Image 1 (cartoon, one colour):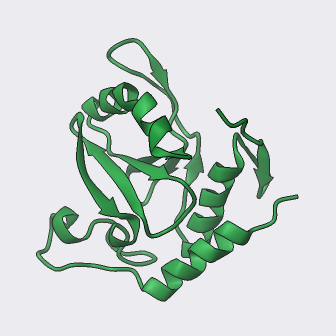
Image 2 (cartoon, helix red, strand yellow):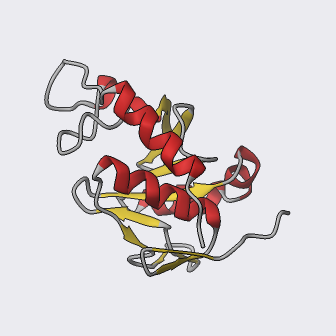
Length: 157
């Protein structure tokens, strides 16, 4: 396993550089987040602390460097989702590739992250996840791509 590098960004000490990159990404898109906001005791008596909470959307996020780490923790993520929480798994650096959305104790689907966020302050869900409308909602691709590039190239000191 690759050793993580604790990283400070905006006076917050993140456990890894990857988590800090996601914070940069959220900032670039104007998405408010709370880092390691709240821990939970799961039904199996295990403790779990999600990496991010997005208060405007009521969703928790977990950052993992690869699908291997996701699979190693799949039982924890399923237990967390049983508690009626939404969990978005962010795999790798911010990009337009797939992420995993958990709900009701199962992986709901694999969807491109760019399809999940409608706009800077709009609905979170789109396509099949848009419960209030049959319309697709997409963030401006250029804005999303720019946020990915800035997060990927951000230099931490």
